Image 1: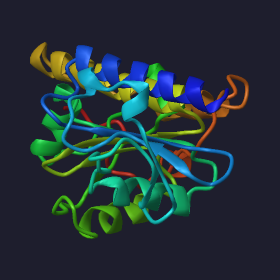
Image 2: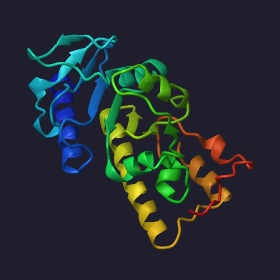
Image 3: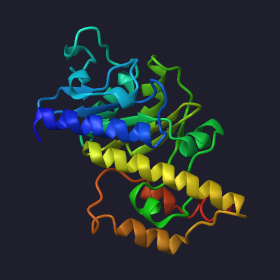
Length: 235
């Protein structure tokens, strides 16, 4: 995929995020790592519905703009993206958004550590709630750093959600799966309870990851820990 195609795909993802209601006003940010070690990133202060290829910025590994339309600036939250790329050489795209269902968990200070959906147990695993961090500061990248080793998806306390992937579409799919999972769980609780999959079947699902060519990290050993008090819990 050449540079122009990458920019067009990034814009398409931004438009989908807005259409799905994951972002409002100037919320959210998206980035992609390029083969030369530079990055494409969305500009700050602009609705994702208005993003076009010529508005995409190219930045270095310090967040400095090296190509971009005059007057456009990169989001201060790029620090969070750069932390993901620094700690995870397998990551080539980062998406931050405020999907309502998943962000509801973040605002309620609840991790998504239920094991109730087959696809999400296999592909994502448990989703941690990272500590609160003030936007635009080093607090946010510092708060997510301890979780990057084992997780591709995180909830940001009182803030939103973060997804990383080996490419832009994979990161988008993870955010999409997270939000659907959150909505299903909320509905299940309303209907009387969310029930976890058995430990034996969780192990089977995790072992299927290579078969389905799932990339990224997974906190599988934590799910299989017999002392994990969250396993088999009912909401």
